[in-house]
Amino acid sequence: MKTMKRLTLAGLLLASTSAAAQTVEGPEVNWSFSMWGNPRALSAGMEAIAEEVATQTGGNFNIEIFYGGQLSGSRENLDGLQLNAFEGAAICNFYHPGKNPAWMVFSLPFLPLGDPAVDQYVRSKMFEHPAIVADMANWNAMPYMSGLLPQYEILGKGDAPTELSDWSGLRVRAGGGLGDAMEALGATKQTLPAGETSTAFQRGALDAAAFPYTYAHVSFGIADEADWFTSNLAPGTSECGWVFNKTAFDALPEQYQTLLMDLRGMGMDVEQAAYAEQDEKNLPVFKETMQEIVYSDEQLAEFREIAGQPVWDAWIAANSDAFDAQGVFDAIWEYAAEAQ
Image (cartoon, rainbow, N blue to C red):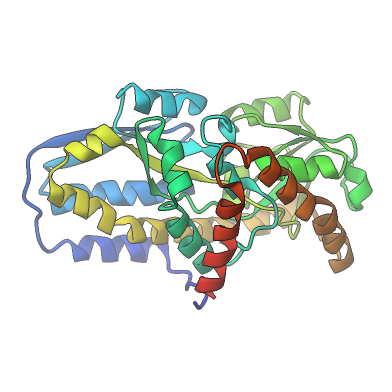
């Protein structure tokens, strides 16, 4: 699979609008989605889908995204779905690892997800994996669409960690296996929700924060406070995706179900384009206002040796009694090979 062309967000939205030539007939349905933070690249795909659904149904099927935790806190969105409090939500797997143990595979370091097209293929396939589906079924939820978070990079205050040994003792916001990777370097991991990270960073309770590069650092105000940034560490990512209330989805007429599922590809294309646009806008500012840390090939190889296989093996061993952790891990690599 060739690397996906970076289409502009405006072009994708225009294509989406022009594609809606036929109206899907059906009853009036109103859905509410729970999201933390403000509208941003992560939410762009779901926003585009909501617009397209309304257009193709002549306004009969409406999806409204509630931001800023209006419907639920970021760590309680799965609870809200279980209680039928709303019809859909965004979730971040490392906000509640005990609620979605199989989903934590997405937060393991150094997975083969750096290429956007490969990433989209792998995550789309993984959203159908029995263990991933089972995690959500426990909360009356079903996986819908990956947030396709880009590889994380780290922004921080104080002395720049230009050597791997410089990470020792730093307090780093990084969850899941990514946090374990930072701990392997001697850092202390913190798993704060995105909305709480900015305050902790401003107050000096954190030294550095790992977020999807570059949009999330800007969206949550980290870039305004940071002195330095890594540009090629690429330690991994996570899964902040969209899930549906299963009861609500099952109650939809078949034509609405089909419409939603058919729009996932468009939604993910919009997400990818939104991330690319943010990088084009933000990266020059980063370079002007912060010290850029570029690690050598030798340093990156050392990091992967310390924090790659050992973290993978530990995760598989810790979860093997709960589900087929080895199978879930292997599936990521198998799908990535298929996508090449």
